Amino acid sequence: METLLRRIDSEIAAAGGKRSKSRKHVIEIFFRAGTHVTVEELTRTARRRNRNVGAATVYRTLKLLARLGYATEHDFGEGVRRYESNLSPHHDHLVCRKCGGVFEFKEPGIETLQDEVARRHGFLPTTHRLDIYGYCRRCAAAAPEDGAR
Image (cartoon, rainbow, N blue to C red):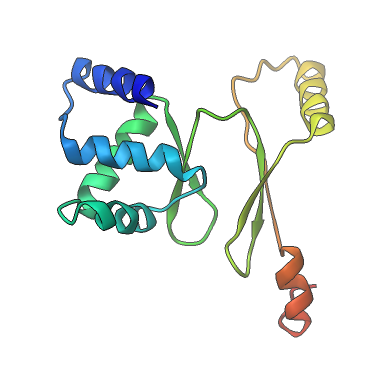
């Protein structure tokens, strides 16, 4: 983790960005989270250790990490943006419309099919994203009357 933090700090400095203990703290917490976090969630976690960390610092830090290629910003239709680390291998998402849960999955068959479709159309993909929306097992079973099925 220290090597990663030093590399990111160097890139921030090279880009003329602000380097601070608060920003370093936010970056460390973000990479340790291992999940899709909102600015609000990350701010709450960061403030447990450092009360001076504000939402603006968290927001700017996440935007910077995304610009530098270390994070991806997602909009899963909940009205908030979520961020995840780009350090993990490619994966896709299942997004529950009721509880907001985001579940990662890897499916080689889907990846192969996407490659075949792109090749058939003479298309050279540079990136892609697959998000499947619906209801997780728990929500689908708990509330059939609200249209979850």
